[in-house]
Length: 336
Image (cartoon, rainbow, N blue to C red; front, side):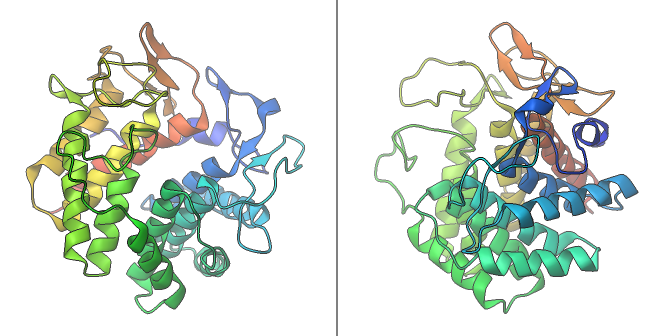
């Protein structure tokens, strides 16, 4: 079992937040910070069992960042300069959905009462909004599911989840390309994961089954010769040549998240195998047979190119690694 290691993530962080980009193992401070990343930082730090003091502090740093990023109407800014100046206006894009995901996860998993209470309050403001973007709504749905796990009667979370479920795609009649979009894009597995989560919590068996079927298709589509060969940064569609590059760790982490979710509601062995394949991708079982992380620091490499790994260790890639290893560890430790 490979343990998640937070050394690199902590090295990328100062008192304000976690820097978005790195040059190899060094933070590129001039590129500033990103709310998308800080929301995921909140997820990995609060999901960590018995976190070290510095990891607990990082959870608080990420929550303070999200509080500052939130506008009065519940939307979120995404870009903060190195000097602490916001470079955009609050919106309802992915950073909104990911922030709700982070806040719901913190409220559900953290043993820090201050953090739980404040995360719930921030969730309630953000959850009044609705996004026109499917992935943003999918991330928000996951946050609502997390909060409902500890507060089943939370009206705001249930309303958000119900509205998200209502706009999720019904089954597609095209058996050759059942995906609800013309092309696979990014963080693809979050769409079926949100369907599975919403279907289970809201007792919508048709939506749940559709999510499982769609995830099974995606997992098969992104498996080549018994290893993951994930959607490249430019997306992919029917008939595209495989393998394709550059492959991003976020795609692997999204599959790990979705397979872990599916395993909680369905006993099919494929979800356990899918999670194992996600972990193995980072360890070298991929199209290039390259290890995709630094085991000394826990930093994740930024992408798999035709010539090998992009050795920069940005925050998104490192978080993707940590998310995947956390799921794999829970699988190993789960009672049989």
